[in-house]
Picture 1 (spheres, rainbow over the protein chains, first blue to last red):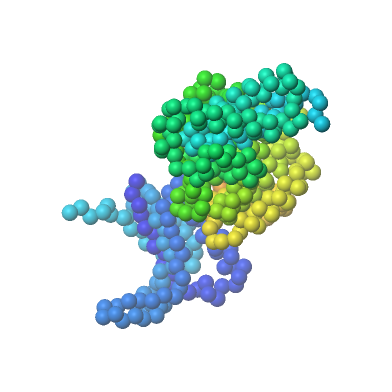
Picture 2 (cartoon, rainbow over the protein chains, first blue to last red):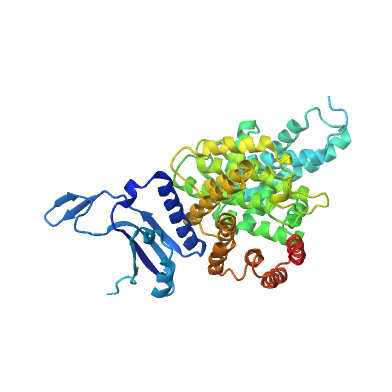
Length: 115
Length: 408
């Protein structure tokens, strides 16, 4: 089995203005969706990302996020186990980020470099 | 005054493990077998002497004094010990001070628990050894609990002790990496021991209850030492209390198991539930959220939230989080059942079909439950499959009942 990285991108910080009830329900959807993957024993690891952060550029230039160049904010990631890329894509269906216009990018992890 | 002859079996049950722990600490835990032999000799001597001269006024003190004497004699006399074992022992206390005070007994038992729960020994053997030298179970009782025979248990214990002799170490009970590491295994073994009693369908109910009580007692032992009285220890204790509170409610008159939904809630042990709450609160210090924390929280929901919709919603969230840190097939099945209770059979069925736990008979019971709403013949097919896969009589009985109720 290969590990695949799922990267969740949000269109904007839409959840900031979300009413609490709606936000809670959305979070519950996340929990259940990830729980479903974990229940198959396919979850390797994952995490949520805070909207703010820093960016380091060449020459030691540090700027604050959010990051204007990125149209879609990186909201979180999961590392999942699947046999094929297609299977990993199938797993991504139902991801709550899709409900709010975001996207899931799925990338296979390559084996360590062999020199 | 105790004029009647003392109840030696009861004394044995109560004092054997204490005395073995103290002596094993003296000789080093690699020499548990030697400690056991000396204590057994002491009890034999007691039986004989008390028959001859009448029982002493304080049988415990008599036993401690006799054991001490035997140990010292052994130390003076035994050449092998002097030449081979003694030089390798790094003793904290000089051999002459064999201490049977309450504090020393407790401390020795705690050290023994850490010595026995050595991951170099197979988990089943760790449990058997703990039952023997820490809980005072007889070989027969252990054999009965594991549905095996005396010879197999003896073999298992022998191998475990051999292993300890080769690798066993006397743990430093002050906080440190080694302790933290080993504590995880100690907690795991206590958890397995409890489950053996709680979930096993193998032994009779009195023995199973005993296993649970012993697991809880060992858990409490850990709360007596600052470096082992940590949040996850309390979480495990909370978990055990919540489960144990339903012990008498789940037992039918004929010894059969009563499922959760049909239990008489007034029979739940409220004192144990309160104790569980107390432990859970103490487990909330610090940042660590172990799987015991989440399992305890789930067990708490079942004990305390009577509104079904609210209960299952909470339980589902907890199972999801538990799976994220610690996957196991049984948690995956329980999670899917909770999903069914919250979102209905259609959603749950779609998720269940992805699990593919084809070697687990509980999986087919769950599928049958989910199909029962739409496709009774398929449900029956799965129940028959599950029935053929298990040899547990009580599981079989439950499955037969489900098949019958499908036809209604």
